[in-house]
Amino acid sequence: MRFLSVCLLILSICPALLKAQTYSEWIESSFKYLDENRLDSAEMALKNALKAEPDYPVNAFLFHNLGTVQRRQGKNEEALQSYTLALTRYPENTVFLSARASLFSDKGDFKNALLDYNTLLEKEPDNEEALYQRGLLYLEIKNFELSERDFGRMMELNPQSFYARLGFASLYKIEGLYTDAEKIYNYLEEKEPDNPAIYAGRAELFLLTEKGGKALSDSNKAIRLSDETGNAYLYILRSKAKLLLHEKKSAAEDIEKAMVLGYDPEEAAALLKFTK
Image 1 (cartoon, rainbow, N blue to C red):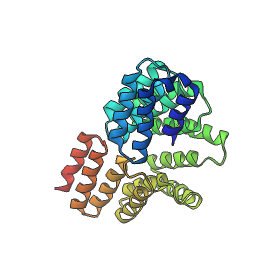
Image 2 (spheres, rainbow, N blue to C red; image 1 turned 60 degrees about the vertical axis):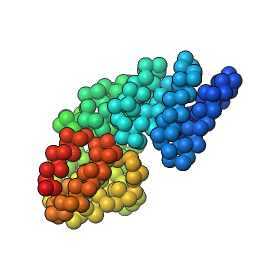
Image 3 (spheres, rainbow, N blue to C red; image 1 turned 120 degrees about the horizontal axis):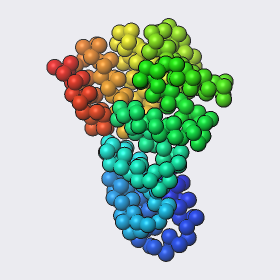
Image 4 (cartoon, helix red, strand yellow; image 1 turned 45 degrees about the vertical axis):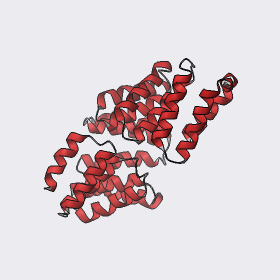
């Protein structure tokens, strides 16, 4: 939906583009391909639009959306290039910064992800989504003080913040406060029972406490509630639960699925050894 709205905006604010029929037609074709979930064709259409009129300033939005289409196909390196091209034209655009930071994070490049979130938050210091994501990155590098600061800031901005609580659950989980973390996850499940992030986070908790059955149940729920192509990590999560339950063949299938979706091949290969 964001893709459609951005491209419609491009055409509405630039009537001159309508004269470049090839350009506008390629954009319209990309809408059609996305509706049909033909991501490879949508990628081709966007590339052709960019080739047809390479100098339009609003092409930054097309580069952003091209990156998102590539990311959904697991083409993370190409997606990173596309996001960077978008930011070359508009280096302080918070949508572009958020997209690239998220991709850096998925790739395990926490340093560059933090740089993008820092730039974003300098421009929008009260951006709750960016505060949440940066707080999670601080957890990854074990800077618990800064992580708690970001989640606390979210609570100041919005005392009912769902994601601030989710962030604190992650913090408590890493600190070994498993009972406190589980209480938060259970509370959040009552509030938003269809949110996959709850089940993914609680599945991680159950893995840490070696409760394979519960971890499998929660990872199944997280996958069912998510876009099938949207999160390779969920399949890694489920594979770990299956390994705890000695379901090696099924665990291997999940790891291979995660690799198809773009999960780091070295980490996946290391995990695959446990399925032999």
